[in-house]
Every structure is written in structure tokens, then in C-alpha cells.
Length: 291
Image (cartoon, rainbow, N blue to C red; front, side, top):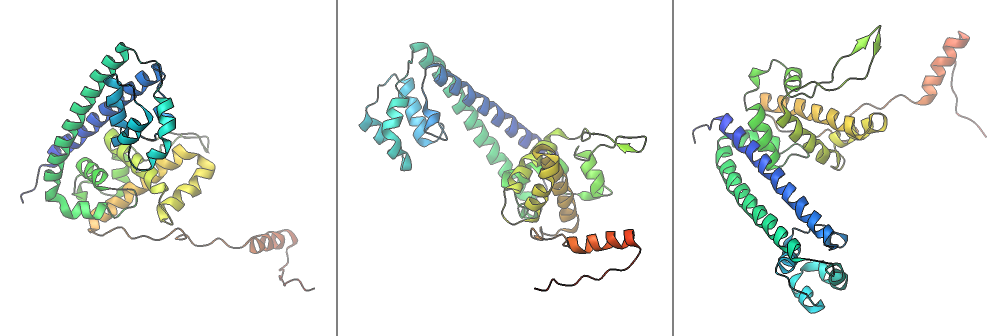
């Protein structure tokens, strides 16, 4: 298959992200209408826009008053246990204005979701030319097929454009700033760069931080204690981008080093032994305590 212009793939992935943001905004508007009508579905459903939630939304928009048995027929899986509570949650003050407004917003959401499906089909077709690179990227914890396509669309498959991984990190806006005055390092922000790349890598790093027993999660939790979650997340995104650079340049899969990849620090006893030797000017031997 002839290579697809990476710029075309970039335009498609950016357009998909824009559509997904618009779809999220529509969902938030529907949530706001539900709250205004005193419909408390979110108290008992984690996702109002799942299969069961959409069926209940349709009944609300159609002006139906659901009984307990009707609700049980509409909802799926473990939600059936919550049927009595859902009946109470549906007992709000829904006016005709609420139903009409929700219908317009819901119809627009369906249109956006159809567009997203079409764009994703085009993206799936376009990335066939980059199967090898995608296969490498998805081996990194936190990176799925969609994220891999977005990252590849932004940086391209050819890493010779960047002399080092630091150049790529700087271009992506993930390198830490350098603000030093009178020998003191002051608070800095990351540099400006590719906003789309930075956004998807920060999203990936949140997922990587939740991975189990990996080098990336260990790196995040080591930093979060003293830098906070946001700065630790950006630092992890910076590390992931530099790992991606090395993988694409060498055409190698991600190699998991495990959470204990760093050498263990020397024991506290050895540290205090050295400090005492400096103070006293004599060598000290440490022996185990005897009973």
C-alpha cells in the first residue's frame, strides 16, 4: 500500500478530536437540562449515554411516565437492581420546553457521533500504511490504537528530522523551561509547542500512571509526592515522548524495565556512618547489636 501523506492523517485525527469535544459539550448540555428538570439519573448511572441511559432519555423526551416494570424492561445488566431508585430519579418536573430542548441537543449529538464514526473509518484506512509504527507505539503502557494514530500523525514516522529526543520534546512543548537568576532556580513552565501532541500525550500519561507494576507508573508516583499530580503528569508525558523517539528511530518495541528499574539507594546506616567519620575524623566500624 503506498504511503499516505502524514499531513492528511494529522488533519483527520485533529478533526476527530474536535468532533469528540463537540459531542462532549452536547452531553454536558443534556446533563444541564436533566438537572434543571430535577432528573437525577447520574446519581445511579455512571454513564447516562450508555445503552440503558439512552433508552431512558428517549422515554423522557417522548413524555412517557415509566412504571417500575417498564424501567426494568429498558435497563440492562446490573442496573436492574437499581430499578426502584431509577423510577424515583425519573420523577422530576419535566416541562415541554425541557423535552424539546433535549430532543434538539440529542439529535445533534447523534449527528456528531455519526460523523465521528465516518472519520474513524477514514483514519483506520489511512493508518494501514503505518502498521509497523503503530505496532510499536501500542506496546507503550497507556497508548491505545486511537492515541497511537494521533501521536504518529503529529510527529510522523521519520525521526531523522529531530537530532535528539530533546529536540522532539522541545518541539512538542514538553521540555521544562529554564529560569535561573543569581544562581537560584525559579519556578518555570513548559515551553510552547505542538498543542495537539501535548494534549494527547498528557492524556496518555494519565493512563500510564494507572498501569500496574510498570516503569512509567513508578516514575509518576515518585514525582507526584513532591511535585503534585499536574507537574508529575507533564513530566511523565515528556518521558513517554522521549521513549517514543527512541522506539521509532531504532524500530524497537517498548521494553518494560519494571517499577524497580532504578538502583537501590544505599542504606541509612552507611549514610550516617560517613557523616560521623567526617565529624570525628576517624573511621568507624558498624557491628550488629548483640543481646
